[in-house]
Image (cartoon, rainbow, N blue to C red):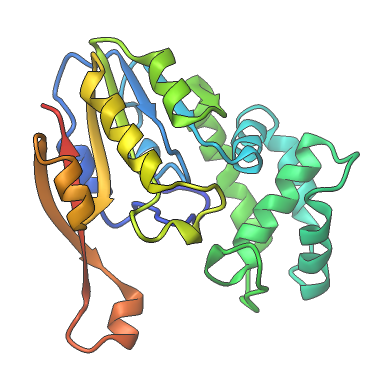
Amino acid sequence: MDSFISWVGGKRLLRKKIISLFPAEGVERYIEVFGGAGWILFGKDKHAGFEIYNDINSDLVNLFRVVKFHSGELRRELYLTLNARENFNDFRSQMKAQGLTDIQRAARFFILIKTSYGSDRHSFGCIRKNMAKITEYIEKVSERLNTVMVENKSYDALIKLYDKPAALFYLDPPYHGTEKYYDNKFTDADHKKLCEILKQIQGRFILSYNDDDFIRDLYKNFTIIEASRSSNLMQRYAEGQKKFKELIIKNF
């Protein structure tokens, strides 16, 4: 199934390739460390008996939790919401307000994602949306999340907590050199720290990155697989460049 939202760095176009590289056996727990829209998670009915979705963005994690536990209430909150610039601007200003319930906050965050330009949650997209149709899909997403643990931890704390020999980590950190497009700061020191952590884990990992000399050097002792995906921006603005090069890195 598809994710119910878009997110920066989403893996919709690479999910089949990534999932095809997952181990065929020996995986008891599956952990998405930088969950985002969860395109890989939703790419199969189940990746393991125990699945964990994690993201450091608390508004995103709240949305996932509300979809999982309160999908009916969220649908009711969304159903009569008007797709209007005034609503969009009001919801943006209210995200940091005190007194909102988790369901109200999730609904506002969902609308910001769905009606913003490029899902950036900052600029109104002037896009026609059928909110009734969109909210119907939430029930299917809720069913998929029924057995998924939803976490809101830093990458290092999460890996330490769930690491074991039968664990499979999928990681899609902010791409090197593009960190400004993400809400949470990720520095060169974080890229290096993540690599050092992955060198020492008991479990297996698959890691997505942009094709970058800095990253290639960091992970030169692991298996590096080159991949590419279509880029709408490159197709529109860059002559002769219609593919975005990426790396898939693994320790098995």
